[in-house]
Length: 147
Image (cartoon, rainbow, N blue to C red; front, side, top):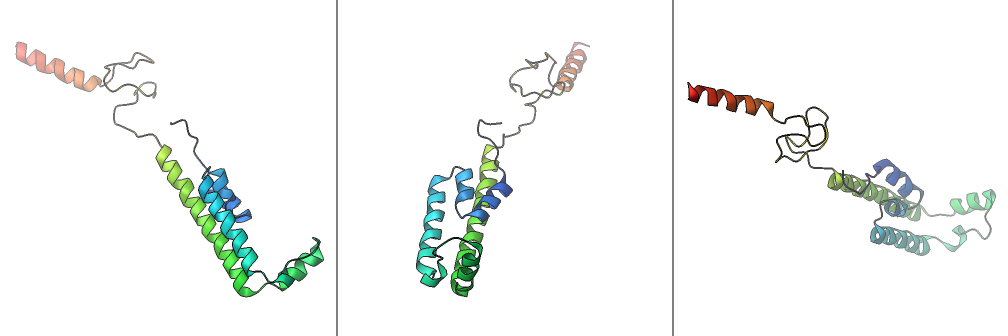
């Protein structure tokens, strides 16, 4: 496994749901996070009517402000959130595929399961011989040639 940790796509999606761009912060995609933050703040600033922004923060004020939000503004902000969630999921999946180790045949020891150098004839961890079937075939070929 590489030095970079695997990311959790669903955690990135949940964070992007809380606030667009937050999932990208988790993924350390700083430029994308800034773009999503900027897009959300700009859209909110341009689309929200002045009477939809509460002057104080209490439950009754927030409910009254939510009733004043136009459907177009609500749909636009919801779309930004959904697209941010999809992008965070896609980025997390892409990061995970980039960090997966490439599996080559014969690079793990059949005895201990650790990674080994494919150029060696034995495992440097447990000293078990690698590819014993090819060795027995070469011995039988040598025996047939000597007879």
